Length: 585
Image (cartoon, rainbow, N blue to C red; front, top):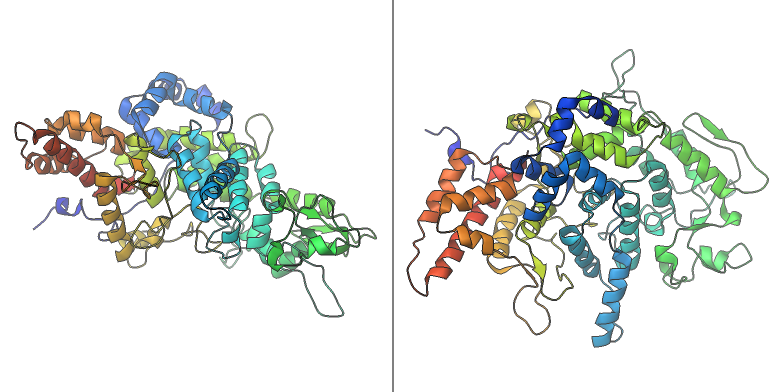
């Protein structure tokens, strides 16, 4: 009865979509040696530029498409790598606090002030590559406002996100250390004020961070080949990367670290190591946004063995020295390149990268071509300039791509249609709760993020092919309806809370270019095809949207402009509601 065309406008989750296999990354020196690929990276069509920007930024705009066409893909990446870090989230929330307290003295900061800062930068910041990678890293090195203690530390979360941004295109070893010493991670994974073992009482150090830094942030559960495939023993069983003994040994390293204090109390630092109120709410005001410091009295000095390394027992505690050995051991583990590389490919390009893709990206992690290990800027460049990532014909494969994250979809709207904040504050609250988008930056429900990298929807064709689609873990009837209803409202009325004295949502789009084309629906759809779908919209979908737009008559006289606006909004909504848009290719 149907050739499947009628399913293409169904929202995600109501049809089985195989979002999957991706390509192969190439190292920078291989790119430079290929004149054909070099030409492809320097000569870019508008649709190819738009497709690249869906992977490398929070979405294409007229201006960013022109930038990529002018500089070429390699040139655009080079410009982005050289660009300084944009504004500070910590500074933004501090300024917002001052503004709020000028109206309501004593008003505390809430998570929503951080969300405002996120949206301001995601939509308007020039360093879009850093913004997109920072967002990806926040889903690997997870802390979350979903934790009630973390929710009381908005400046701390803002500084944590700043830290991810500073390191997003830097070196992984530096990132790993700064994550480890950040007090928000110390709170979230419960090793802030971690105490050593006590044989008399049977007390052991908290093992939470020791376990998760291995499982989720560096080496994963099983030993990997460079292409990401799992190594097995003679019986075909996966070989674990670590045991509980490794967790226990590593947990002893993470003892004796607690809140920063300009003047730690001399007697073991007890009053600053163990602050007098719950989780240190009376600590040094700078502590939530300043790296934790070691308190020697509380650092374990017995021998610590993990991952084949032993730190000998010592008569005097050396917390920072032990930490260096531990982080160097993790950083130099052969699993890190394929484990982290695969997750970054998933966040930026495709859910199921081929082994060859992972192999080459891991190779760049291991050596960026200059002998440097862990150069994230080079890794991201390798991911985005790979022949499979850039070959537009690969995008036609039914198994290539990924489900667009809800936050990315809203950002696509804002960037594509020049959205601006009327207040300048980007007053956008949480987008997590039903019936909104069920995803907000830094609000993952657990340390495992909103979705795991290995999730495959059970009972689907995708699962039957052994493919994964992480984002589908958050897809259900509520999230589907929430997305469609939210976008209907957003496209018609704007988004966010109204500023004081207004009843209009704070963030408003500019549809002037679309309205100007609304009298010619085919031209209007062609524009949306470029901005939102990189020229990948099927003939069927184009015809469907054109037909719907044509059903709105445009009268002469005063009612004409309103009808043209209605046409533009309908075309935009139908594009955002289509499965073809929801699948990033």
